[in-house]
Amino acid sequence: MYKNIYLDCRSPAAHQPANQFVVDFCVLNMARSKSKNKGSTSPGFNRVVQLVLHITAVIQFNYGVYFFHNLDMPRSVFHPFAGKFKFLTFICAIIQAVYYIVSLVNDFVGTNELVPRRPPAIRKFKDWLMSTLAFPVALNVGITFWTLYAIDRELVFPKVLDPVFPSWLNHVLHTNIVVFIVLEIFTSYRAYPTRTKGLTGLGIFMGSYLVWIHIIKHYSNVWVYPVLEVLQLPQRIVFFVAVLGFTFALYLLGEFLNNVVWAKEVKLSQRKSK
Image 1 (cartoon, one colour):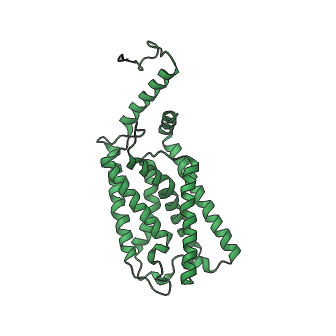
Image 2 (tube, rainbow, N blue to C red):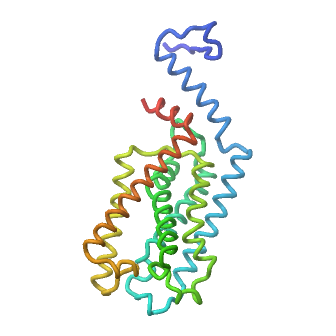
Image 3 (tube, rainbow, N blue to C red):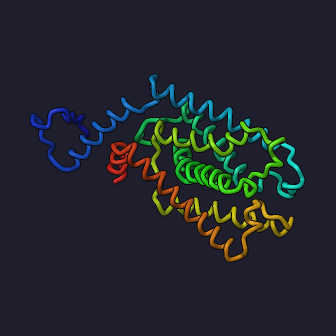
């Protein structure tokens, strides 16, 4: 009933495809073949770079989360209610730790093929987590922290913390999160979700955090960040709107960088999804 069909996609002049379906079939398979040779997890430089990046990130961010969680902070600047989970910095570090664990597991049991036919669940979750949370939240934390630190460090990192808060931990939580997530953009391709889904997921996360810091304020009578203490209500509203807008812009930046760095792979993915 069925016959084996051989399509010679290598020489269009010698063999003209019969219809548009065959054209798409040939183009997709030729592109997928190049994709496998270029970006699969077969032994090679790309795999080594990815493994080194992911292993290093797993070690440093998980240890950073552990160390920060058990760090005793002065009561003058730290209210015990909600512990370290009140800080976006701490939540972001957890997101990074989880993301790189997932990435490392995907390196061994998933796939780093650029456009796999059927991506496994862990690859899908990895791509979603990177696009929707890991990249925009990391840049939000890093850029916001160092900007406010440059203006007046007492707004985000009072000097009273210097004796108890190691400099290396500060850089793991506020500098390395940006460095590693940018390196990830350039070393691993990810399929972005639709913009609506991605921004919706990020919006739910950021909205939930804004509600969370108000709950903390209600029960502890202390704002999580000193900068909020010096802002009046209208200024706080503007500040929160600006933070949300900035975070959404960072999501779009990540999508843009992904489309530029992995332009051919994005086109292949879009062709495949049609």
